[in-house]
Length: 427
Image 1 (spheres, rainbow, N blue to C red):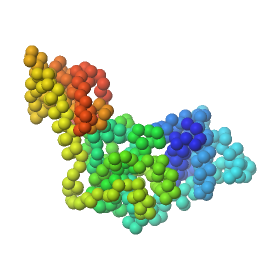
Image 2 (image 1 turned 90 degrees about the horizontal axis):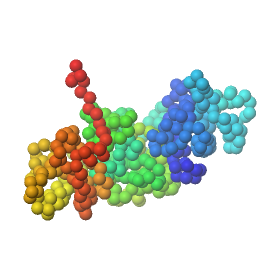
Image 3 (image 1 turned 60 degrees about the vertical axis):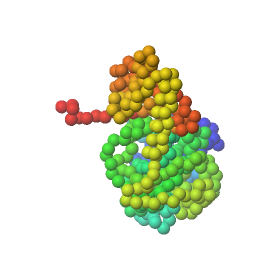
Image 4 (image 1 turned 45 degrees about the vertical axis):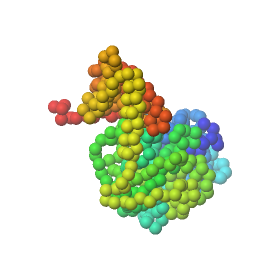
């Protein structure tokens, strides 16, 4: 990672946002400070590999401070400190005082420790007085709201696999309960989906979806069963969610494109990427975004939500996969009986002219990546039935490509996403 690289700029963005939030919510000067390791861990959560010692870290902190000084927020790098041998938070990194005496900071030499503590207080006060969410008053109102931006971190939610499985519509998204969700958010408002990452990542970071809010935020304690939450710290989404109808775009509006547009470079998602959902887009920013977005769809919002979504697409993929597997076996002279309704742990019982039997579980995806989920019943059959087979059909809706493996191969390539714990059975 070098100065000027997209990853470096993104690391500076995340550092500024993280430290601003730290300063804004700190009880006192000591509470505002963090260690290099804590900052490194935070950047790692956003897919950025920045060692806490050496490397680009000092340069990231310098650029972060120069950016904040330009907005009269102070040398924000003062919040990042060393850790003493006893585990206590120590003084700032060695280059802090050297940087403080250079332009544009030009801090007085004085007593180094006193100057540093004064700088910490300045950063805290500046962020509390001029933070993006003021202590008094509300940043988001019905008058300045253009759209809600729901953010997705691929390090927590496997967005790439969601695309490979043919995902095309988002029907709900997790949020943090705040005045935004309880007092401002309402059905009929615009909803956008943002995917984080580095500029060269796949999926490309930027705006990936456009749609509408379908109703108020809700609380739901039921476990997530999508299998797409891959971060152990976030094995399921927040229990608070918002019903939405967000259709994915045929191609994203990249973060790089939006950041280069001066009308959009100050969007909250670019300035404060660490903020909890939902983020907001001003009315002026949405007007500028419309030049990049396809024309909005006409959606009738009712109490039960919109009348369309991803289930129809999933059903089409599943049917195409079944047809492809059935044709494969029948072309070889086998019979193929559909037993999917019996919940046996497989979909087709296929018998060859010589009497060989395959118990075939069929999975289909619209993308090219052969990644699927098995239910506990299907996994049981894979382990217990020697004749069990897994048939995965990729690009099912265009050019179906079939791959068939036996149970041991399928289970050897699997990994658990969720572990259900029922304490009523532990007594």
